[in-house]
Image (cartoon, rainbow, N blue to C red; front, top):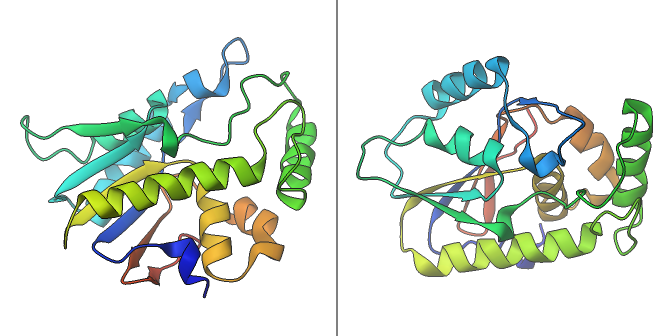
Length: 194
């Protein structure tokens, strides 16, 4: 296991993919919101994972924040949103058909240093995500923390941590909305892929 990829020494991190979104091709993917199905998924995830986190962090993307809101246990709690947890940025790319999107994801993950369709590179997204994990772990001590993020960055993170980077595309295809994993003491306690 690649300890330098995990970088969690002080806390227990629950890493959650956001719930299903309402796709709107008129808007960049970062602006999409939860669908009705996504609301049901977020409620089910809350029932499965539970409440009582010391802190909740989220990507700045609306769909992630909306998912995180289901885990607030009181009106005094807040969500710490950071762009470091955002998805691999695809906003500058053109709208793609479903088949072309899957091909672009496969190419992006197979060529981590390259930009495909004006997307952020997989390497850049992973480095940014690792920066967030490092900061979150350093800001807290012995705390259960929820982090709501996105499919591509979470797939890369877990694949690298498990030494399965060659299978990252296959892992990403298996990832479901509201899938979650646990990282603690430099170890993966629960893989995000079931």
